[in-house]
Image (cartoon, rainbow, N blue to C red):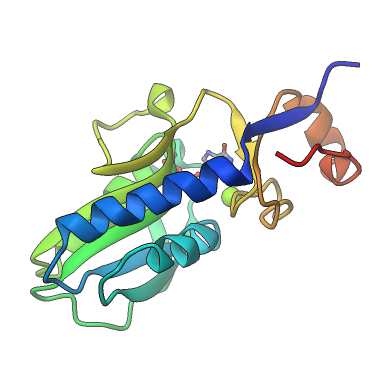
Length: 192
Ligand code: IMP
Ligand code: MG
């Protein structure tokens, strides 16, 4: 039987790359106190690790959204269920995303954040699935270029499962996973 999923970026790759991003951001924002805004729930793991890799006073803030249908149908418009509780006027905002796929969600959130008088708004994405991009959007900071595949782990879910996997897995057989969403729970994955 073909493999259902395999490790795409192991926990060590993730740790190293997040540390590098943290150093880059530290250099770029020296003397400033950036506001990191992330979107629950997928971005929570990345934010938690990234902010500890940044050697500056960083404020974490969270948003929660719900999509109207899928991103493409809704043109990226989302309903904001939880909003940041800080005045963004004059602040340097970094939108911290787990993954940018079509780009519709990030573009919408960047425009919302930008409309609040922030001094700057940048996008930091752990994974950048550029081949699926619908809107021209290039994150300032990217952890890894992501192939055109469904991925889970390190915050990313399939039907709310697998967010707690320390590695990022690429799903090869999405049909099998749809048929049994718990399939990967039973998989004995090698530690990466
Ligand atoms: P976009 O608006 O198409 O860029 O959608 C981005 C959102 O879709 C992400 O924040 C994820 O919640 C979800 N998403 C996109 N690709 C994947 C994937 O491969 N695995 C899990 N979630 C994904
Ligand atoms: Mg999801």
